[in-house]
Image 1 (tube, protein in one colour):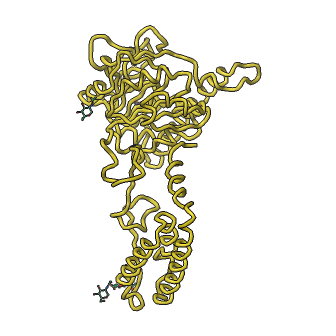
Image 2: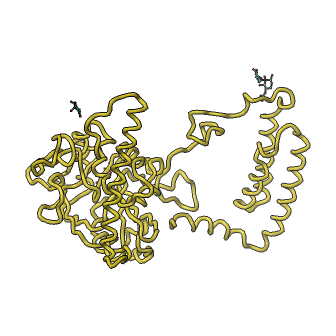
Image 3: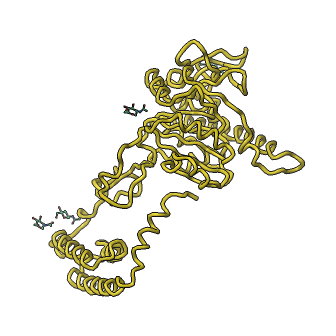
Length: 404
Ligand SMILES: *[C@@H]1O[C@H](CO)[C@@H](O)[C@H](O)[C@H]1NC(C)=O
Ligand SMILES: *[C@@H]1O[C@H](CO)[C@@H](O)[C@H](O)[C@H]1NC(C)=O
Ligand SMILES: *[C@@H]1O[C@H](CO)[C@@H](O)[C@H](O)[C@H]1NC(C)=O
Ligand SMILES: *[C@@H]1O[C@H](CO)[C@@H](O)[C@H](O)[C@H]1NC(C)=O
């Protein structure tokens, strides 16, 4: 349930309530109907739906609430219809029907000039000239999946992201309005759906076409300490070292699973590491390289376009995704890495992990953990099957290492 968009619809229908407008409205409607009939008998070979007259009349009345404007629109539509269809009775045929196969799927009937296939999270005004709505267009996007209990942490984190970032909060606890105590909350996008995970939101609200305006996309957890982190500096380093998928180094000693993501004190970034003996079959493969974790991941626009497609709708914890990120960039061991000089602390606070259900005598967090592991296995199998199917179809022998 997105919080987006309600206000504008309410604002527009609110215009409707003035009683002295009702009479004008009725007249406009009658004019519309009469003209519609007239159009119908004047151009019998052109179907009304093709011209979309009824819907444009109705929506225009709703939107503008002005008889004069409606009439002007009708005149314009009539004239252009007349021009367009002057030859119709004789030689209207399929060549006049628009069909553009290169348009986005489903939009082939539109002239390409009107197709807007990508969007953004820029907040607009309800008034004025649309050209002047946006004082600036943020180039980067940061999302946090949050519960209100972590507000202090998130407030501190958001302040490490400059005005060049669009901020999106995904609320898993249903508490959204409380955040307005922070000034920045008013320019943030709030999306609320109870007890959902970061990757659930990402799949549903961060479609690559929707976030196409953003050069880099940060998809972050809520329990990250950001004292030694600056987002603008981070992006400079990511660009300098050509990282398409990255994360800040993690402060050593706390909650560390992998060597790869451990911060190194002596460099800007690193792209490979040594793990415990036997952990890496190949120095260019995870967990020794081509690998970051999924708690504080940063994607380039292009990398995200691929990763979004790899996220499964039913596997919400994202376990295993970190091992598969490398499938989205080439060569992965050069384009995936850890930024050491802008680093974070993983605080490991129990949050969503605690929001499971106690079942069969097990604590809620145990059920969640079990599900995480199960999802990891399912993801691995799906990836392996998909690759096998691909190679089979191509008649190629699969490479030996395809495991995720
Ligand atoms: C109508 O047909 C004539 C001749 O066939 C053509 O020159 C003209 O462009 C056509 N008009 C429209 C609006 O298609
Ligand atoms: C449709 O009209 C165009 C030009 O008016 C003509 O070249 C074409 O052959 C026509 N197609 C059909 C299927 O009648
Ligand atoms: C935001 O981006 C602009 C343009 O790249 C840059 O000049 C400015 O320094 C950035 N703001 C911050 C706080 O870094
Ligand atoms: C892959 O495995 C097969 C046997 O399982 C072996 O013969 C082949 O040499 C291996 N290829 C590589 C590139 O390791």
